[in-house]
Amino acid sequence: MLSEIDHVAIAVNDLEAAIAFYKNAFGVEVEHREVIASDLVEEAMIKVGTSYIQLLSPTAPDSPVSKFLEKRGEGLHHVGYRVPDCKEALEMVKAEGFPVIDQVPRPGSRGTTVAFVHPKGAMGTLIELVQP
Ligand code: CO
View 1 (cartoon, rainbow, N blue to C red):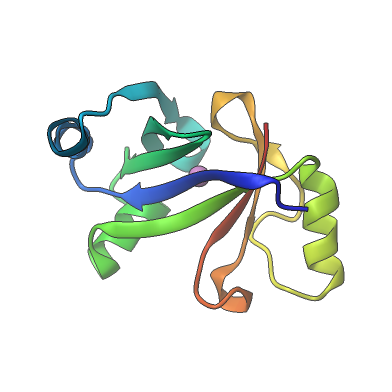
View 2 (cartoon, rainbow, N blue to C red; view 1 turned 45 degrees about the horizontal axis):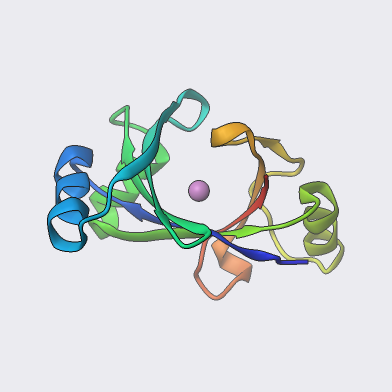
């Protein structure tokens, strides 16, 4: 069901500072940048092999990511697993009785289809199912 790691998402207060860190420390550049209005976030994607580091910062003060930053500070936010079929993967999680955040798949960044699995049933890790 899980074909690859699509991205590891890191919540940051200052997107420009985070991009500068990756550039200066590791010599890597942002491949894709996007504001995801529905999630109230801006992302900067840095390619690592066939996966990405997703630097994530909130675009509104009352958004889920800004609440996350207030509560827990900067750091690991979620892991995105690439799946061939998001709907099928989500249905399997639901059929096993694990809590999900998205009942049905929805559009993600980069033209992907995504759904989030709740961290409550996943050992505290927010999981995103990503269909390219
Ligand atoms: Co993500």
